[in-house]
Length: 620
Image (cartoon, rainbow, N blue to C red; front, side):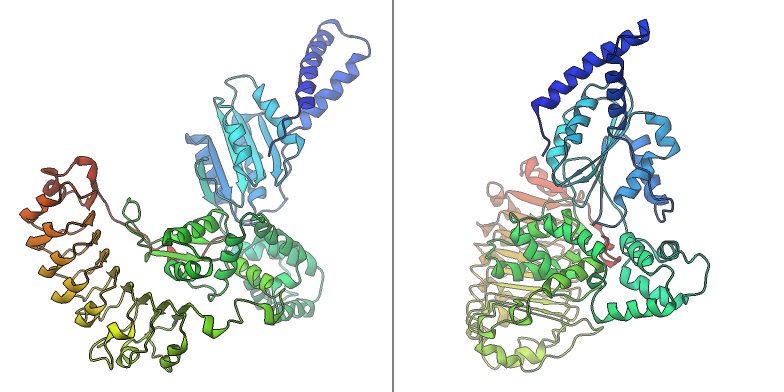
């Protein structure tokens, strides 16, 4: 929060008087002993907002520096927010930017640097008043370092000065306040250079290269971790380096590097007591293996039950908040330039930097083992079961029948599991509401089961089948699950047929068939789904026509038929949907099909964009 103190305002009024005195001094040579007051005030003014000197040696900042110069010197960006977790070099880069020859050439003496922190000092208010009184039209650069809240940003933005650029460093993003740029961890070469410099090794071979390499693996490319490690081991024998490495292997780098711990810990402390759920969500990320991308759908299942979140979007909101605060990376692998259609989050993935994961583990270990709620769970209270196989091919599960005793189990998520053996002898789960199968081997799953699936899972309301490549035909037995509200079959590229029995799912609200590229038609019985609100057939490019009776689906409100490139025409019955349809998503070529009878604002044209960013190493 910026302090608006009346005394400061009065001080600046006195400063205006001092300026007049200075003018008189320059004109007349002397104005008694008031000259000393003027000179003192000038010195205070000169120091206000002065730029600190960056470290003598910096690495890995050339490319980020070029980007900052491109955006703030040549572009029309007025504010840029530089983000990363603590210790990644945000402040160092900001200092280096201010000291750059081109930057100083443009802004000259009008470069101001102030550290804001969690509780802004009076210097922030003084600098605000100083800039407010700045002569109009002058190029001006303001660096706000270590910003915790957008309150400060709002105040400076409201000045609306011409030729005014603001560079912000923060651990959080601030949507609506300029462009964001995330600073990446150091690569191996830069990390080694920094480690050798910090430890004063130079080109010395006194510490073996392979030992230095192992040390760097634990530093995760974080400049602060590398620097404090190098400084603490500077001048020591190779045996001391080896001893430190063995200590880290038994525990964590955070057990031994207090400065690094405090720096990272402040990111968690910044959540405060007002965001306890976000803190818990951060800790939940640690439950998953390192260097793995995690489906956001897994967190939806966990958090819906753990924290009683009503609606999948609330879990995604928490992931966005973690990403905004630099505590996780959220990547969407496909972006159709559309709002998310009916809670479809199967293409949202989460990754976490190794150092942040280390922090989460460190915090969790502070509790006694018997009190660690993510480790010790009373099995009869289990509500969510997530089984993930990280191998290269689907694996078999044994003893699945043990789940029968779990009377509270509501959600099951299986990833890269062979399903056939599980479904051959179905386990009765009366409380089961949702099951998700991701990259599973379906085989003859759900065919010739020992008991009817509707008897085993009578309360099932949602089924998700995603990236199950051997699924050719949806088992008709699944259509006995008459309480089903959501059936999502996505990215199953061999699926060619849906059973006519699908019309039995009278309570179905969402039918999602995205990217089932071999699916050639929809069953005629689909017209019986009168409660169906959303039909998503995005990228089903083998479908040539829709069922003639689609107009009988009186509950239909949304249709996504983007990238259905072989769809030749619409049945005449779609005219019966003109008043009830709220949104149709299609590509440019299919848009004329709807133009003749549907209001223009109900038709949205999409262009598919895919992203494989989730394959990359996560950033801090």
